[in-house]
Image (cartoon, rainbow, N blue to C red):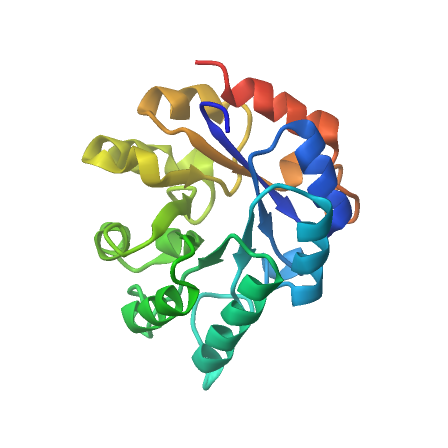
Length: 226
């Protein structure tokens, strides 16, 4: 990996290969971006692992939103095991309880199921009832690799003050900036000490078309400027 980390959303093998060609460091593998990313099939993860050397951070999420339905936690724990066997290098998840706080019981159960693999806390942190409390709840959990965050539910443009505050609080190394991330945001985030960036729609013409390796390469060049 180069000095900054570039993570690209991949829906399938074609996306994964294109991301690798463009210079990405790792993938976030998901299904159904119409629901903002759900758990992909183990077969997809296995096919990507066969065709592409990039590590796969695999989404664990059964439906849109950040709460768990009845019986879903046990199902997701089983799914984690299947996906690890298929080639996942880590996982992406994040859940709230009914009050909008981090669901620590569910989070810790999935950490245990995924262990020793690393995990990313999903953008549930941006949608928590108390964002600062959510960060405090998550930041010291075991095997945490990154926190995927835009700083605000509406995206990075509105979330920059929160991201700056989190970086100044010592969390710059945990921030994986994504969610409405645009090229003009990058120099500002680099100045905060943020070194990990997550892109999806920014590296493809639309969600109906594959990742464009040339666009990935442009982001690679952009985030490596410091």
